[in-house]
Image (cartoon, rainbow, N blue to C red):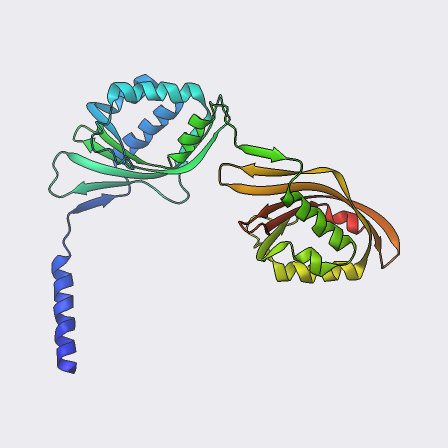
Length: 311
């Protein structure tokens, strides 16, 4: 058995060694890299004449994510027009290397027609008419010919960013707003139960796997579990006596068509007595609650100035 294993390992190693074959050279610095980066910056500033000087006459741009088998690419003339459009319609436009990434120039052994340059950048800008923000990584491959002219550009990027720009030109309804709804009633009853110390009833309006966030959290903080919030509420009631929780105005129930989301937003004033010094304090609060398909509160977010509890 041991002999068989050794033979198998030797065969595997021999097979692996056999499949390793150099097929060219990768350059960290190369004149083609300088041309590619200069071309991209010319595009960013909309310098069409300079941009044109970096491109071969048979230049073609391709969308690397397209599934259109009949795509013919974008020729040099249209690419130059696109550069003009970008400079006129995108404010604060910039393209910079992504983090510590840097371009590579790859010269394949059997390719005498030039080489390939690959880049990893961050594209930023704001669409002038809609305010849609562009802030995304973009990866590109450039075919550079023997005359150091760019003949091919293949781009990989998040197309949804540009879809948002397109949508923003149209006026579109995204759901409906209600001032009376069963979900609003659920929020009102939950607050009323909490005000009267009936935690069991208050919690009955929430899903067991509900999650919670508050305005004191920073990006990256994990949302709180239902169990954690229950514990926090007990601590809160140990420190404060609830005089009343008064609704300000009226809650709104919003059903968003995009994402099929059900959300109630509500405004409240907490009137409390701090048990440590018997001081009466008033704290305004804003809440949002989303609901699951069973009509239970799935997520809660609170916006409260925590310093008011200490004053």
